[in-house]
Length: 110
Image (cartoon, rainbow, N blue to C red; front, top):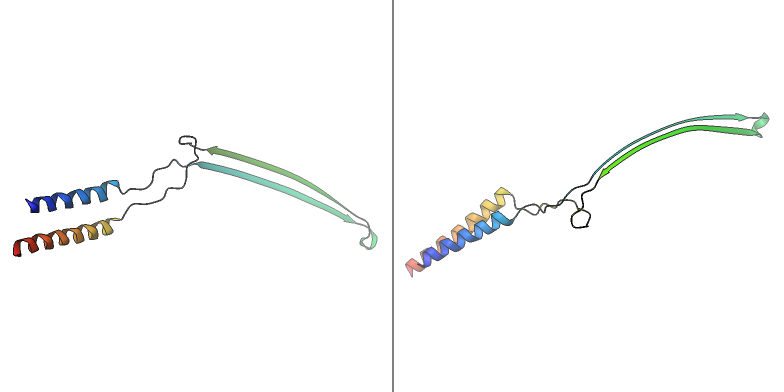
């Protein structure tokens, strides 16, 4: 009966580790911008550079679009990957299984 409890506890621990560990979910915001600028500068200087006049002609054009999804009135944050990768999960499973095997063998031997 103790072996069954160890196996059940190990299975439950592995299910909890693999099932719950996932990236933190959040809605992301999209933003697009397009900017254009065009300038022309004309300068005239008088004798010996004492009188100068400059004229600047310019055009600016800009577009912006945003798509922000709010979650319960809070701006979303960047997704944080909180999950364990496959190799780490495999190592955890092997360590837990080895510990359970050692405990079962110790109980049988003793």
